[in-house]
Image (cartoon, rainbow, N blue to C red; front, side, top):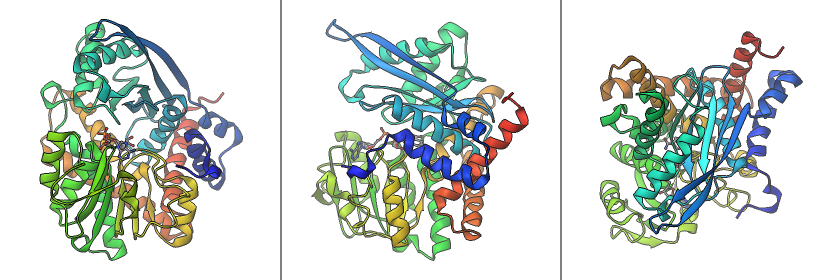
Length: 418
Ligand code: NAD
């Protein structure tokens, strides 16, 4: 639970980071007002016929924050807490993220308040189609491009592409993160985890940390967490504890990550994995480590636990897992936090490659995708670290400063504030 002082909205947290960057950059009040407001947002009611014959109505959102640097871009999450505030915050985060990694997109986000684990595949297909038809006038390959996020996956994107295509003709570039068979990109599924690994490798080198000699603690074993774990494990990193929404597992020697992936695929969770001892889900951050990787949901590292986490580095693979109060505590303790808009940007970078491949109808092989991903991630990482070295900024403050400055410059050049 977050401490009382942290009872802010998700949007307020992103705005606070933005405002600090805007002040340092001397951005005008008018421009600031523009950036704290989403450009456009839509709330939709989604009636769906359930398998038992009853109709249930779900609530969905699409928020488009800013498109100064290119079409809106952002994932869609299916989660019981996917409300306006969360979706607005994540849309704004996307604007700074796409700018930081310098891809020609703006920021958007979508969400449906639903627990996808409680719906059958048929129900999820109908819900996704209803949502797509309700937002289809706002999305499109040159307007707003969707992608997977928490609780959605390549299958969800295939349904969106199909539903959009029924009304608009074959348009694979409306969604990224699709299965390979229907226009997905090689390397997209692993891209967020792989990008996080590239950032970690660079940071470890700078900090003199040998990854083969490191204990890693990981929260979240979905798309981002499990791919990050597989790639980092392949590089010799030693995972000692992993947890997901149902429970955790601990092994002080090392967890066999490929076996853990197989176990999760069969059982839907890491809980009960025989290659370690059970760990209550809420104890994951009590395990001592060299690197702690939150890759699940937001606000899990907050004022109530940041002071006691024993680690040398925090890698934010999820969006907003570390609250501003926890950030301040880590700063005080001299523990660097590598921020979400840098660490998990690999997903949107390869989404950009998928989009370009779809527009050109020309496919890249995985080697080319991973090379280009590495180049973009390292360029962004180097820009952030050189700003940190020449200032007293944290990694998050530097990352925001770069992203905000690029969006402000594009907005000014386009002259749309008249
Ligand atoms: P996912 O649905 O594939 O996996 C989520 C994981 O988190 C699961 O293992 C789930 O069990 C676990 N989890 C959920 N609630 C938890 C809790 N309370 N405690 C512990 N574990 C919990 O989602 P994902 O796509 O891997 O996304 C994870 C995070 O990364 C989100 O913050 C998302 O916004 C962010 N992200 C995802 C992508 C992407 O390409 N998928 C890109 C950028 C950022």
